[in-house]
Image (tube, rainbow, N blue to C red; front, side, top):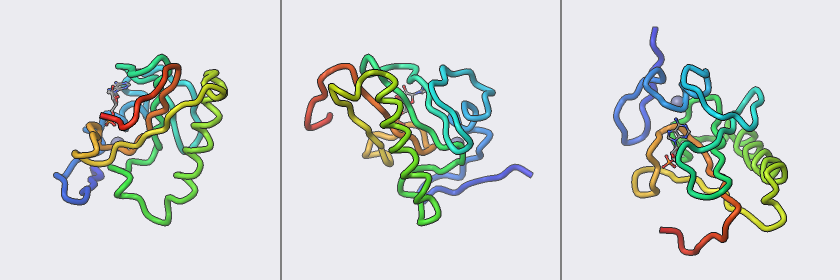
Length: 128
Ligand code: AMP
Ligand code: ZN
């Protein structure tokens, strides 16, 4: 039976239709920079900075707004891995940005939770 998730306020989507679930299962290729049992980090296909890595939990969660107490350790783990990748990609000393776009007005296009790690250039504030 096909598992389905109903995101808050959103349409019914199936994990077999989710781009990042396909990247997690490697049915769509990606450039993997880090992987463990709970998350994968890949190079963004359309980078917005010299370093642009996406940190994607393996479990399908539509957005940050769909997380709960049960995801506390996963969310903390993502930030620690982001800092580790920043060191490995040599952007830690100069500084970098870790972003989550949540929902339509937040600029989220792929409805599977992910964080953007951006570095290698000066970041602007406020973001567009
Ligand atoms: P967001 O707007 O926060 O949902 O970000 C989605 C990100 O996924 C964008 O930065 C896209 O460039 C990136 N993206 C879309 N398709 C792929 C893909 N096949 N491989 C890697 N990154 C992708
Ligand atoms: Zn997914």
